[in-house]
Image 1 (spheres, rainbow, N blue to C red):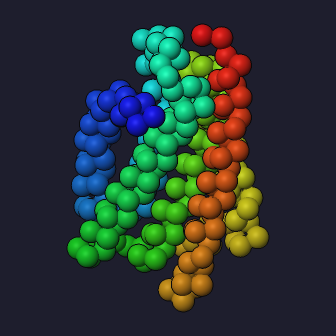
Image 2 (image 1 turned 30 degrees about the vertical axis):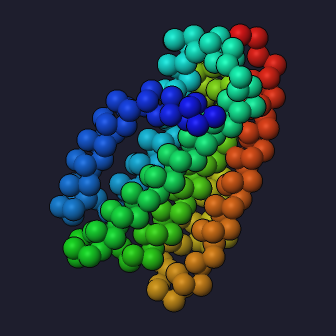
Length: 217
C-alpha cells in the first residue's frame, strides 16, 4: 500500500511545486501586510481540496485502474491509500500554515492574535476534511470530470453549514471577538472538530470502498 501512496505523490509532484511557488508569493504578500496570515492558510487548504481530483484525472488518463487491480493489493487497500494521501496532505498543509503563522508572529507582522490564527487554521483543516469526505465518494462514483463540476457546490454547502453552526456563537465574527482568555477556553474545540472530521472521513471511506468495489474496470 505504501507504493500506492508514493505513486500518488509522484503524480502530484509537479502540481505541488507549482502550488509551492504560488504559496511563496502569497506568503510574501502577507508579510508585506496586505493579507492576514489566516488568508494564506485558508488558501493552502483549498489547494489540498483540489489535489485529489488531479490524481483521479491522471489515473483515468493513464488507465491506472486496469493495471492497479491486477496487483496483489485489492480495492480496499487502494481506496485506503488514497485516503491516507489526503490525510498526509491535509496534515502537511496544516503544519506549514502553523509554521508560517509562527514566523509572522515572531517577525511582528501578524495583525491577528496567534491563538485566533491557530483556531482559524483548525477551522480550515476541518473544512478541508469535510470537503474531501464528501468529494472522494463522488469521485469514485462519478469520476473526476463530473465530480469536478460538483466541487464548488459542495464547498458552498459546507461553508453554509459552518456558518449556521457558528451562528449561535455570533457567526464568523465570533473568531474575531475572542480575547486571549476565551481562546484558551476554546482550545478544546479544534481537537473535537478534527476528531469529528476523522470520523466523517472514516464513514466516507466505507462509502468510497463500496462504490469502487462495484465499479467495472
